[in-house]
Image (cartoon, rainbow, N blue to C red; front, side, top):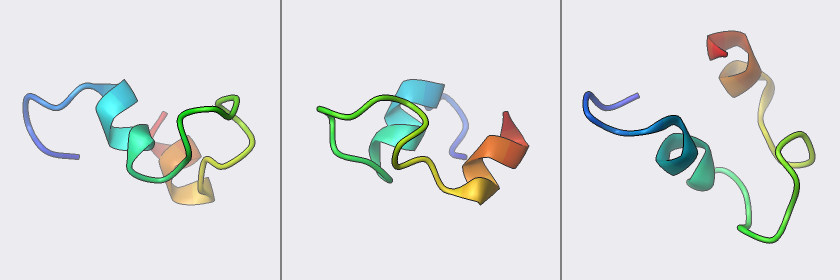
Length: 33
């Protein structure tokens, strides 16, 4: 995660905006959270 980048911006790279958080969040991201 880039410094100064919000969590929403970070996960936004990995999933379409229209989905819920869990649908397209990669396991690596979930481990960070």
